[in-house]
Amino acid sequence: MDLLKPMSSTLTAGLFKLRFKALGTNCEIQFRTPSVEGAKSFRAAALAWIRDFEETWSRFRPTSLLSRINAAAGREAINLTPAQERIIHLCDHTHRFTGGLNDPTSLPLTRLWDAAAKADRLPTEQEITTARDLVSWSAVEWGDGTIHLPEKGMALEIGGFGKEFAVDQLIALAQKHEILDCLVDLGRDLATLGEPPHGPYWIVGVEDALLEETPAYRLALSGKAMATSGNGRRFRVIGGKKFGHIIDSRTGYPAENDLLTATCVADDCLTTGLLSTIACVLGPVEGLQEIQRHHQIDAILQCSDTTHFTQNIHRHVIAS
Image 1 (cartoon, rainbow, N blue to C red):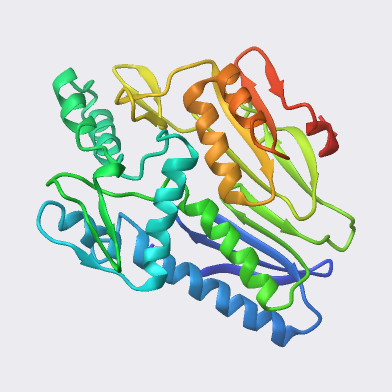
Image 2: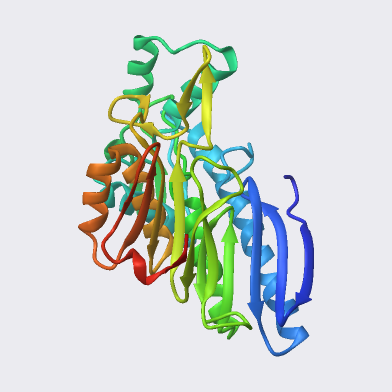
């Protein structure tokens, strides 16, 4: 979208509900505030933040900062404001947190497989090797207000954490506006504050990996975030075969294992998104082990013929 426009903004059952399209998905914010003026103020601030985030970091906008960084690869460094450099710090954090499984410079592989799907032709081994050789966050030169991709063809993307980061920022913005009860849902990556009018928890659904628009589980959340990653819904078709959208940068190929979707619950959406994506790369067994290494993280991993749970997920599940 060239311009973020609210689909609707209403007061229903004690909740202000703001619906809009952004970040390539349907978004909704539900919140309670005692005054219409307060609701209008938060609404304006939330939409302005999302608009600025997209205009700065969307790889689909040729005028965005991200596009300028990528266009300058192999040529020159790009100056950053302190706020912009914060996102580069997050790139480094996600790379370290995931042990390199989430590499912010993986865009050459994404572009290669997108082009392959469009042409309905598998990439050659040489094409995969060439793209994979451009994936190296450790080679990126950044700090002191600049960033430089040292080799032509390198490209940065924040799709591995951008939406989840945005969820957390909108929750923080709600708190800044003294909103105590809020649900931010950006394409089913979400976070919660307080409780809805019918309290004491926000009830959210975990979609069945095999049946669209069908909840497999219902979770009760307050002060928690949830994100789902997977190849069950998003995939590329090449030569009649489905290839998941999540690419394993270690091999250059889409991740291929029995895990269809991974849903994680944690204190912040960024962590849930990173861990759910890690699980989809590693598969259900290693993925569950990795999730359980982190304190207070709960998860549901849906496979084609079974479902795996972390030990304490029952504290959130209210029905299935």
